[in-house]
Image (cartoon, rainbow over the protein chains, first blue to last red):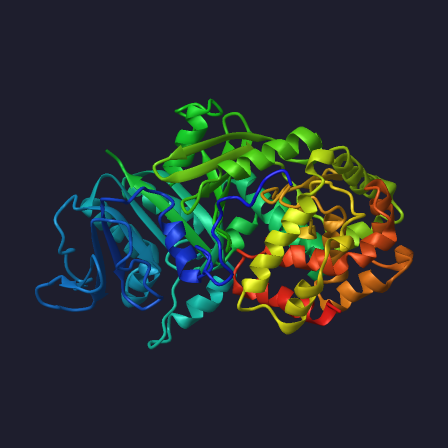
Length: 260
Length: 293
């Protein structure tokens, strides 16, 4: 034998690090920044599954639920480990000092805010909130989030559901408007990606720059080729080569850095 | 973590500190995060594996050894760095598509891919171990047998087989370092040429024929029925693993010995997959229970 077994983990029953969908979700939110020793804030309205938990590698971890109306004075309450929970009103200014976090997580948050404020255009809501978030980030801090892609054909389904009061599903931003909203809020080093198969169980994020996007979608298409007929394959191949998948994919993942 | 990937590429001299990098990221169920990194300024692509949970230096050594031996069949490993608790392996990124069973089937008519596949086994044979390593099968099977016998998931057929297994079963099998996970998912085609990925288990076993068995099982379907058919079919010319006989010839392995070793190959498979989680372990255990005599 040329080499003995390497120093990789032993045992037949141990859970692999990214075996759970929640672990993969946390991993992609930890991509843009090194958060150890930093302050992390997750803002959410509806429960899409929390990204942060008591094990999140940061000094301060706050999970803040946004609610309508006046929710009184927000009080951070300990939850698990370093994790603190609080509520804040989305009708008022965010109850956090300026430049107090290094990472703000918006897991479906902009879509849910747009759904909660139906009298306003979703993009306006997203832009306004990105400006608010920039103000509570330290210089060099990161906003990272995910949401539905407004230019995806599935968005027509979501738009129809905007009128359904109990389960509104809104796509706040398209690939292009996401880039624009981050830029106009003052973020730099922006990256917008397509995410699949699903935000709750992600496996791949592919940058929307056309060369990078083509490469990722070519690979995904060829990997599923056996399940496609000839015409289905050729049509999808044409879409890939034209660089259109990035517009059509249902979910976006994005991040940007607050300028120093 | 992306800042560390950037730092690794800059400090290794692959990109400039001002380069704007674009990342495609895959977080699969394994231990490492895989990234394809594009430098639009130079139109260069790099493949990076990033792992926080263990050191990739042995994996890097395996990749280098494989590249030294198989050259254009493997991506070129470029660097390994440890930064801020992360282990980062950088290699050239080869755009490719996964080889499908259908591709190999069509290789019956097109000699190119088949020739490269058989050539791969011939190249592997050139790295046969010398007489000093001749006991490597004994060592490996003792290690694998001890581990599996202690496993609480080991079924009765596996325990019975391990209890009666002896070295005569592998005495005539050549000593050729094996890739270790030679399945369709780890084979790629780039402009028609064969590429082989995921070399982390390279050389873990030198039981010749194991890679041939794995690719045969992969094209036939990962099941006990397929394993039994591979074992029981004297002439595979009409089978999805039609290439196996030529591959064995390229490995100086009699085809009858290859077929007889199928239970051993399954045990090796189970042992090498011991860290791949319970689901995969149970799938192999099920096959073992149905195939072992």
